[in-house]
Image (cartoon, rainbow, N blue to C red; front, side):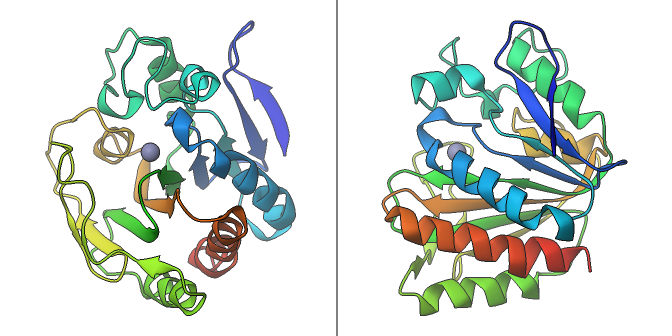
Length: 226
Ligand SMILES: [Zn+2]
């Protein structure tokens, strides 16, 4: 994969593999969730030949990653201010990358710093619950990693969803308005069909985080395209 700079004198960059990318991968949306950045980078190097053409943005918010904070240089959560007319440069740079789509699949890796249980948001135009993901979740459980049963974060007004065995399916409703979340903008504006957000448990040891992400590539992403 080759590195691209969108902007001179900025930390914002992305990697591209192949022509006409069908897969978009994000890490570093929230800077306190930085451990997944290296793990995902290594997986992309290892699995590159088995993946479709892709774009990878390792630091969606370079300023939040530099500060190891959920919030960016303007003290805002970039995943709550993602609007076309935003004057935040980090939003504008990511909009430029999203407009290189449409992508079939968008995977945005996050960590839940407070959690020991794994969970995943599955949203987009597909109406079918993903057996690939449910099977992968059970593989994780066999490694004695918990799966979330219950609410994600009831204190966040944008969240408060109930998960079963680490899985929650959302079917996109046409005609909805943007709400500041990156995936909602991307689906509303037809830049992506389906979005997956794995929430890696922040409190797990590194080896277990690596296991979840490595098997997510082999068991979910690669099979999604085959
Ligand atoms: Zn996050």
